Image (cartoon, rainbow, N blue to C red; front, top):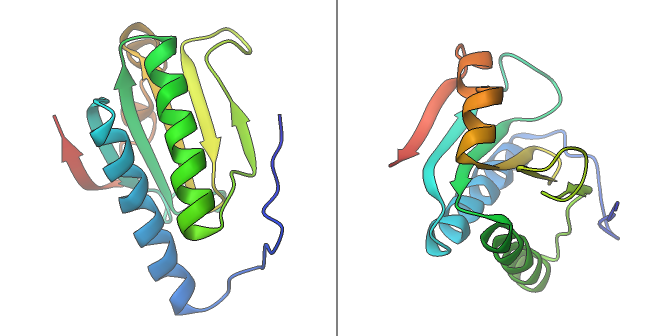
Length: 134
């Protein structure tokens, strides 16, 4: 399912970086409130042009991931007028991984087994760790 932000604009100035940082921290705050574990915020801006930040977190099950997805949807849409550009949840394409693409910030929520299998921290090991909550 694809969602588009109605007033999406291309950000090209320094203010956009601050917005990306605030968005990433807001996402971290929301998933922490919903009991996601092993939360890591990576700055991948030097490694790729697809995003500035990756937020990684571990969930216990599909129900928890869906609850986090719904909370993100409500809080970011209501408070920030933002919707994800794309969402793939745990039931799609193999399961165990929820991906929510907010443009400069991409959220990855995994079940523990799936997180270890794909090892994004290892894959993006050159990225700067901005925040880690265990």
